[in-house]
Image 1 (cartoon, one colour):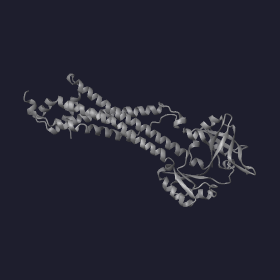
Image 2 (image 1 turned 135 degrees about the horizontal axis):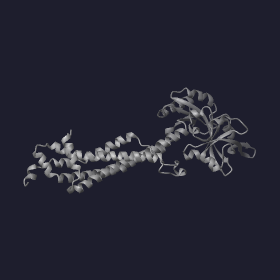
Image 3 (image 1 turned 60 degrees about the horizontal axis):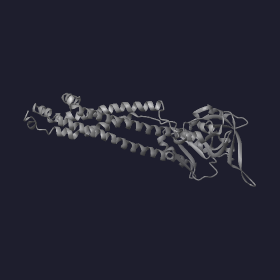
Image 4 (image 1 turned 90 degrees about the vertical axis):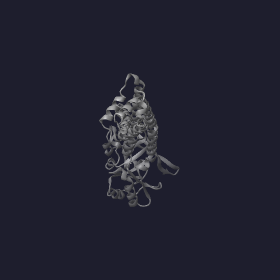
Length: 411
């Protein structure tokens, strides 16, 4: 292991002297290169983590961990109540909620537009779905109100585009209307807006509306049926086990899907983006390693006489090797520390003050989320220092091959 002598000499060699300005400049460039690579990688990983975690939190807050549905579209799940009670007794299941989805048109003062009407049980739905906890106006508890018009909760963007306000009356048009002698007729039903939610995810806020299960059944002209039974589990990564158990209990006509299957494409894309970003930005570290290599080669050429003197005075060749290895590692360590400080600081500030704004209609986010993880800093620092160490091997080895007699012959 390098001792105090090697560390002392390595640190002295890194200090600038008047005739070593070029070496000093190249050393500074090497430190900046390492710092830039580490900083860029930390920021890129923070952005990737931010998008992945935000998407996952939003999806899990808006959808269930496990959904039990019909394998083929039909009349819906008829005997859903006894089945829901059985599902609540499964291990790891913390909440079960019957739901009914349907496409409708919402007629507002400004314009009409399509939406997804979701009927829920106000008592059991909060155990599974967290979206209605993010209310901008009104309260999810008002879904239990009874009156002339059934209650409904709209997404924030949906309310803005249709011009609907809290406590206003809205007309819902369902294409699944009643059959008449002249054919199907759309179903019209009025609702009162008792709340407006804002999840932060544009697609949900623009297209979703919540009402009671009974009101949704009436609006869609259906009987006492549901088309999905949602389940929440205590460990999201054990959702596949719960899905298999639910399928076995429900029978061959129903199938269970998990949140992993619903998000497979986007999560796979983010994993690929993370790998490509790591490799691409990692090239900056290779450039910095090349600068360290050049710095040490120039240092060895400049210190031929010093090395010869040290060896002739009893210095071991292993000590000479350690001196130049320590130089490269010191450059890498200083650059890594500066890069980590800059990367984590910029990530924190960019997320806190939302520096990078986005068009929510295009990206579903209003700003770029940054979520740096301490574990990323550890492996990024380890790789940066390892690359710096590898860049020192050849220059350090060439320094040990100097013959003192040849160098000092004419001194």
